[in-house]
Length: 168
Image (cartoon, rainbow, N blue to C red; front, side, top):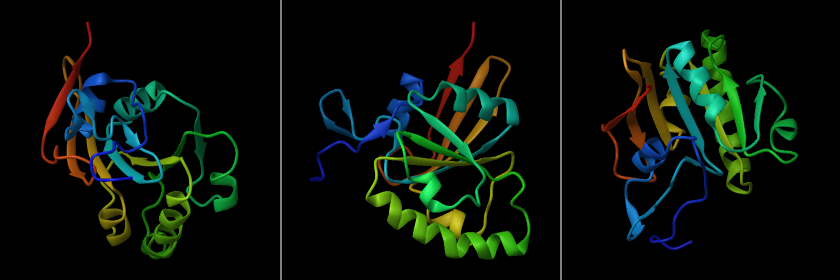
């Protein structure tokens, strides 16, 4: 894949968010990475209802598994997105476990077309979850809808930018 080719991605279900994630255009009108990047790790945090709404809109097959499920279970079958609930991963032991696990998961993902999304109500700032994800986003509920803020984006130029999805 050369630098101008778009990354393979799974749509978030929101054109505005897909465009925000893949803001760098490879060709006129084509996002570099229009959605959650396949073969990579994404971290989301925010209110439970906004995260749930977002996960339910993903276009494709989403498998919700325990974060400590075997890798063979995670990376098998016809799955587009693996969703990992990190809300109970709060101890120092969990941090150490992820420090060993995420690099392995990342190397397995490079050979697959699966996108991994780790989500929790609060930002997980362990070293592994701070540096391993290619995309980190905050998802918050507003009076009018949901706001997405990109904190880190290795696939596009949208770092620090926000987009709001307004509900009628």
